[in-house]
View 1 (cartoon, rainbow, N blue to C red):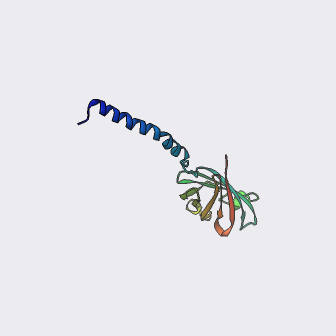
View 2: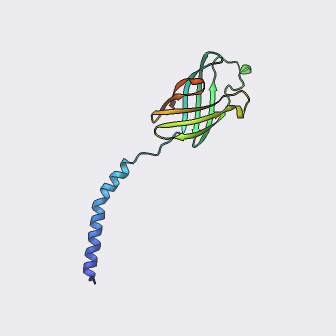
View 3: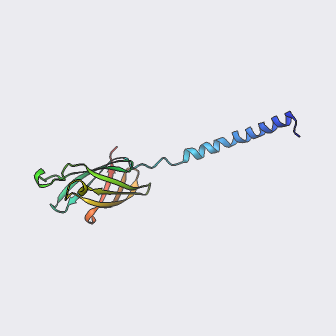
Length: 143
């Protein structure tokens, strides 16, 4: 059986070991990567294949959902029911390497875009990949 003095010494030895280990534990915690997020407003420009001119797009992501808005330049509002409309987006992948989402515009307005996109993250605020009709685009997250 250990005396009270031996128990105290054993506790002090354990505390000394824990204290000397804590800087290493703190260092590992500091080096842990921040949580990966795809939240924010992402933009890109692509060619409107139907009309042949550029279209600016904003995709706003919050968690697993978001909205897609196309600013279609020369389109007249009466010729494009999808112009400036918030169309639904579903995010399927959000990692440090990939961002994948689906735009399901035709679920809201018949004839609006429906496509799947898979982007490779090239940085925390940039991604490159293919959207509908095989176009390669570079997305940038607004600060």
